[in-house]
Length: 557
Image (cartoon, rainbow, N blue to C red; front, side, top):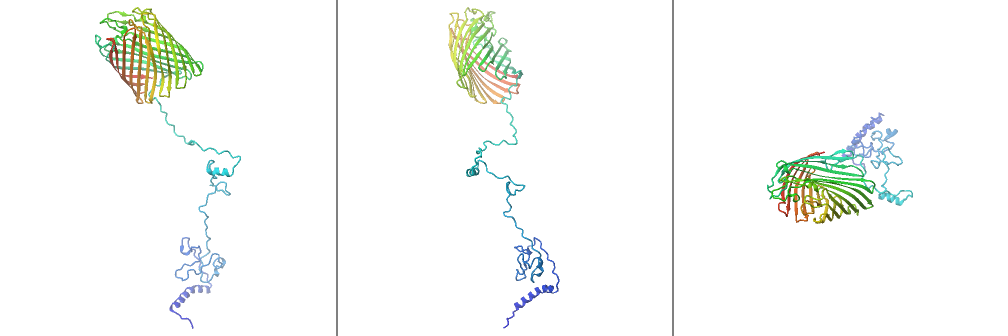
């Protein structure tokens, strides 16, 4: 029985006939097909996911894969393309697939590889001190391999040098000085003005009572320093004069100087030369020049000039140091003039002092050097007797022991203690003797603060009737602090004690003050100061009090 023909089957047969009719008609007439149009690379409609262009994607066709042929099939490629089965679409020769390298991007070839490129990197190798290098050396030791080098311990110097920091000058306001050969000379001139409440240092019970006066003061001097590799030379000198405008008779000079020289003959032998100079005046109320009469006073300020020198040899025996020096000193006095016209012949008390100084020191360490020093001297006066009839020629002996210390840069100097005595030719004069203390220490707790301590004991001559001399002990302290690099404030203090042997006279006094120094430039400095002086005595009419104010300028080179 023939199959039933439905309406749907008839429609499908008609559609297939309409689609195949053009192709069959063209083949029957042996007409060439139109050239295939190659789609552009961006046309996704004609390119299958597999890269085959023989695939039809017409949604109107029921079989979307009709006419598909695998790549390389002779029915659709090459010379047999025209013999393809009826109904196959011809889109031209297929493009070969582009295969990307794996991995992508490719690894760069290192130097030493079979085919290095022009941008090859140097072969990698571990650090000689790394774990990988040590492991490889342990697994495959080489007999000629050097020992592993230690890694760098400091940073590598940069190729671009850093700009050096500017050198900071520690003392930018100190004077430069003048070069004199290999010496450096620093001269200065200082002028001051102010007020003194007691120019003559008279007692308040004196008649007439002391009166104050305005003053002008001038100072001049120099410092000399050597710049030698072996030897040494240092010298200091200051001379001054104060003029009291309202009290001319109190005007007076003063000054001080020192000299230290050393010549190294050999490494262990040196020649030492020392010198000193001092200029001072005696106050009219001093007991040694007192007239002893009521209403009769000294009208001038008798000048005292002292100078001396010492020379010797210092020999070193490893850490032991021995020195021997000879010394000479000369002291001169000016006569004193009284208000009644009489004169006290103090020039007859001028004397020469000849002495020998021996010293032994042992350097325990660079910071400690103990020493022992002995002095013997003889004083010979120009006149056998003084104005009061006493024979004052004498012989003296002094012995002291101490140490030179240098505890880093904080504390350095020396201190000593001992005993001294002096015998006079005149049996009426008692022996002058007593303990002595000497010190010179500099303590620097901070770079801006400096404390200086000084102590001295001296056996001084006198013309006081019945007194052989006076033992003078002085303690001085100076505290300086830099508020700025060019601004310094200094506190000063001095205490002294004079004990006259042969009489019951004892004097105690002190001086306290403050000083301000402002360095404008290297060559100009401004200063201002105030000091208070006081002397107390167990003898009536011997004490005094004075206050001094000064301001001025210092010019230095």
